[in-house]
Image 1 (tube, rainbow, N blue to C red):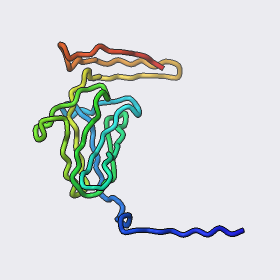
Image 2: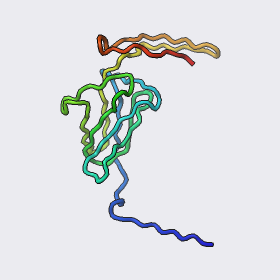
Image 3: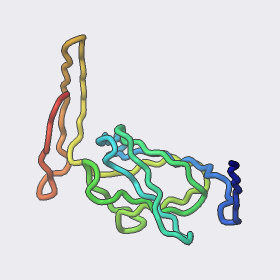
Image 4: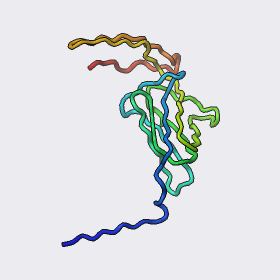
Length: 154
């Protein structure tokens, strides 16, 4: 018994692969914001295609993100209720959407307002004991503040 296969292509899928790297970090005053694993992602929207959908970029635990993209104009958003921070209004758009004109590889930081910052971290350890000290600075106070929900060690 033989199996016959054929590959068919059309003009719509004969594009070169994306070649522009978009890298960046989520930061507060230039300092990266750490996030939980697989809890924060960024959406990139590109208009002009027949099918409307977003390109998702996961944010790493160190606050960094990266994606390989095509040249084009994108709208970047961080969906609501993600991460230990509040989004900041973009001066150009008047909301939380960040326009990205990609004409070559690019690195950009996204400024946010964290609820807390962990600073002056010192971790020491041996074979059976680890000691950590740090300062916890509350950034957002007043009615918009949030309490710390959970602290744990493993």
